[in-house]
Length: 212
Image (cartoon, rainbow, N blue to C red):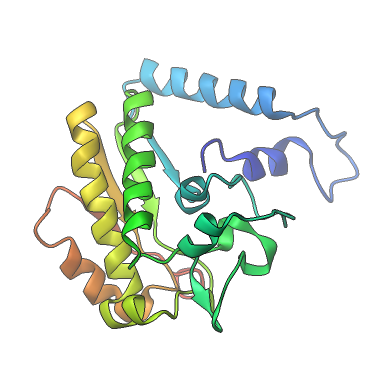
């Protein structure tokens, strides 16, 4: 996430806790909290790692700070970038953050590269950029291109290419790709896609298996 708003909201608004009064928490306050955390991290010479979720929504120019359902009128260009599911391209259950992209579409890879490069350029304080591969279940692209080449391998390859471009603007920034429950059956293809770039970190994660 860009700011991790859902998690700050969980802490400061105390949902389900009748003993604590919810604290005001608008976007400005969230941004202030994040800025304070970054300042304290740097003061202690700690490594700053940011993002993870949110890149896919950002590539579409849509909000991606949480799992809220959105009523959004998509342009034809945006729709063509979405994962094809059941013959349709639409927001997955109306949630931009859970909506995957069609990574066999060259335009999608260009947009991902552009936003990653821009973020790295605008945030030189970040040591490691996280890219969490497409998350969720039953929401992966079913088009012929993604099925034949592997959606997650295509996504990982797009991220690595974007990171290489980002390093031209921010030479010290590193990349970490996080696997998901969606990628589980094709993790070997993801590892193969980044095999030529040992500098790229890989973190194993699976929403169902990690916490069992």
